[in-house]
Image 1 (cartoon, rainbow, N blue to C red):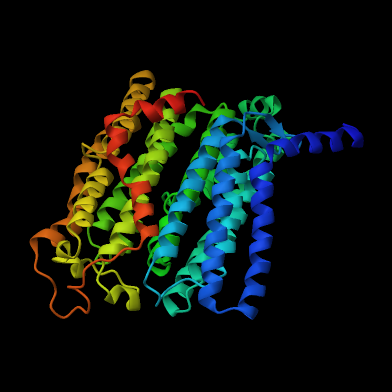
Image 2: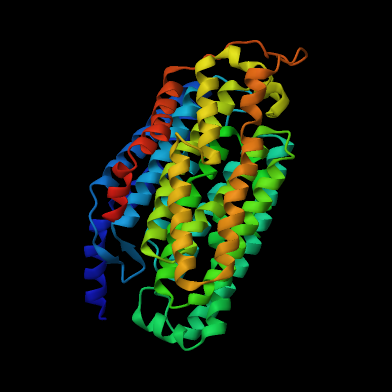
Length: 495
């Protein structure tokens, strides 16, 4: 392709790059604005201004994404804009909007994030937007690294020892997964001679090298599994979630997972390798078992939710492992609905925790005893969310698991792979196991007296308007999408 044609392709591609260009501009603008405002105003005024501008930036990015249409390859097949990418961009943007609303309205200032977090969050959203469109191995790597660097910074931003340790562990495990992923990508490039996973040459050449190609693919998925918190790249999750403030941990639980899930589906669609089903089934089953069994022993609410996300990553993979259109649709439905469930869980845990959690940063499960009196409405909402995480009706968590396991059983009937049957049986059994730890906090809320020596244990919950807006955004879909799943399924089927 001549230089003139390359420049023309770049100009044509800019029409499908609007949300990303807007986020890149906003990232730079927020960094400069923070430096200027801190010199001329108080930190409180700076925070209010930056939070308002961040909300506007995310709303505009969401609106621009909604207006996008499928355009195919961009920038000489570095990126690919289709309806799936648009859908996952909206999922990421809605999650970020909910998190900023909650953090902005939070009255707990002891562990409040520094003002830099707004710009870093926008940088992370930019990386996730790019990741949803990445179809070139180099573009996938760069997008994952942008998301990872932002994640490391957000984890370690709070000025205490726990945050520093959590951020450092996150960084070390992230570096290892990136190295493994790069090695896998180099093997794929050596086998095919191209970095474009949508190229016909890519699939043809890999088909000639079955075993080596399978190993290369599994190594390449290391970075994707790291973002999913999937086994064996899950070890960072509990420490990072415990160290990070609630808004950061909440966004970690959904944003990177949604984008990484789409990348994984693109990889599996592009590669003609059927043998990948068994190793992915082992990874999913290990994640479900390790996440659920480890969560049973936790005494901190944030660590419990961290192990929950490890188990949920396994459930996310269930639909993908089916390697069918029904399975991919089920995984997409799971990711979209998990957004509402997990953010609602983090927000409600933060709201119902006693005031002592604000100063210590520790959300001890025992301290939730008797807290339903502080806000009966929020306590009941937490029960509903716990049922959704378990996968019980009348919540959308049941619908998501039903669709995923139905697709998995269909794949077993087609292939006869025994690992799929093991995943089906043990996965459903673990849904029962998860009931014991998901309902632990609701049980303490309603059936145990308040802890006498915990400061603020009897203080009523007082939320500001922005926090009620965040909850109003997250809670209704948990039940409505159980009653009317077709609202979302029809959108997914049209992607």
